[in-house]
Image 1: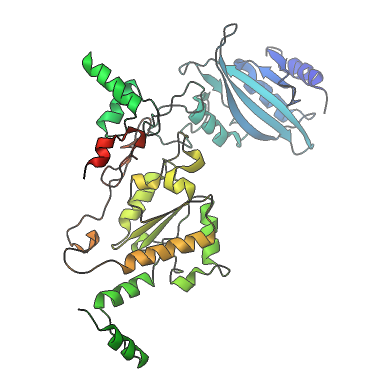
Image 2: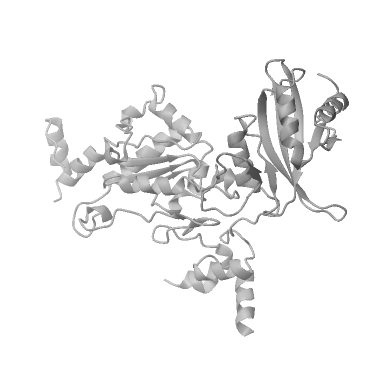
Length: 198
Length: 214
């Protein structure tokens, strides 16, 4: 298969409006990817699927990556697609698309209409990262139960407290530990007595 | 009730067994435990190995794995219990007829094991149903499961039928169902059934006075 620069050039010619950028991931991965804007990811995917030079007929992996905001740049959720061609025995082409971390704005177009294999994996990305895929035929949680509200693979997810093994429960967790008759390590007892005095 | 041991031994030589009814009854019960055929994770593979010819669980009368809880009297919780699966496990246990027993097999089933800190794994099935035998190990070897079955058999053999000493299930009116947890927004609700499970005591918190108390 051609070099990534060439692939980018071909894709940019086919979908002129798309903003495509080459991302070199960590040196260990040695796998440059194409970052495509949200509006044109579907068109670029469709091009790679249908173009006789690529014939990317197989989407092997869909996942998401959570980037927390840093001092110099804002955070994002990045959705990654790995495309292979079974017909031409080549690949992968890695497509990436970014969306804001805020749950109400975290939307990207679904690629399920192009590759059926995306259906479950996009549901998984929705379940664990909270990415909403527009155009997905059946966007429900797949691993967690329907009543669950969190997205546990996000880096700012806080799991339910496990006060039994927490050495110094405090605030809500301490309250729960006391109410439910959990353990009270010495530090917790001191904390509670302090709170009572106040 | 007491039988002269010498006479008993003498009669045995003649092929006559004199023993309390309870002992005969429990012998029958403990020698035909029918486990429920279901596995949750890799421990189930060891359970299958125990039942197969090499380890041969049939020697202990526990080879009839039933595919329905209605015909089973032992639940072997073999593997990781995810929070999504936990209500179904409790429901299956509720559907088993009394007397019923439960073996928690492997690190995950007894405590959550390596996944204890996970958001999706129950920290031990004993939070919702009473467990008779816990087997540590990841996964426990078939010998360990067989040992657990033998431990359970000893437990059954020591159950009494006399009034006042009977096990809970012998009472006609005793409840045999356990509360099924509901799916909450962040966790299962409630996170444990307080009737069957109490949080472990932190012994750093035990004072000398506590020890002196009767």
